[in-house]
Amino acid sequence: MKRREPERVPVQRSSSASCAVALLVEVVGDPRHRAPVPACLSYDISDPYAVVLDIHAGGEAPVTWLFARDLLLTGIHRPSGHGNVAVVPGAGPCAGHVFISLRGADAAAVLRASAADVRFFLQQTEVVVPAGAEEERLDIDALVRGILGS
Image 1 (cartoon, helix red, strand yellow):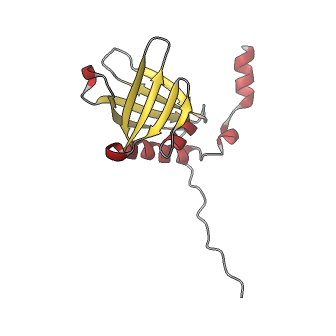
Image 2 (cartoon, rainbow, N blue to C red):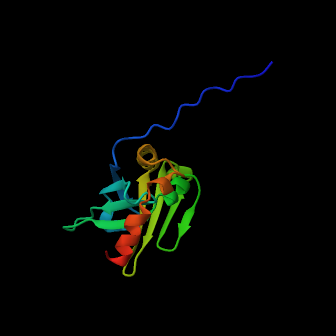
Image 3 (cartoon, one colour):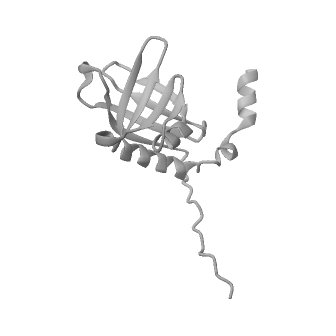
């Protein structure tokens, strides 16, 4: 007797081309920022491999970081990234958090964010563009036109 495979629900796609999730982060080790700092993770189909992190640390404009969505997808489970951006899951008393290390030319910071908030954001990005399907959404012609300036 042949066993039937259960039917699989296809990935549900959104008609929206972007998503954003507001969250609070804490700057680890900075006594000036003991209180939560407002931030926003956003994703747009126009750059399907990247996410944007805007940190509203009190200036007129947010501090903006652009990095690979894969860093977050991997970093919620195990350490990911090196160089300017790294993501590490919390352990022990910090198990419900994700640490995002940011290094620029003039400054560096480690942010602690709720792992649940980051997971929720990543679920929203998967609705817009499932992981592994980024290439289908990349407009190579527009990229070439932008490089050539035409």
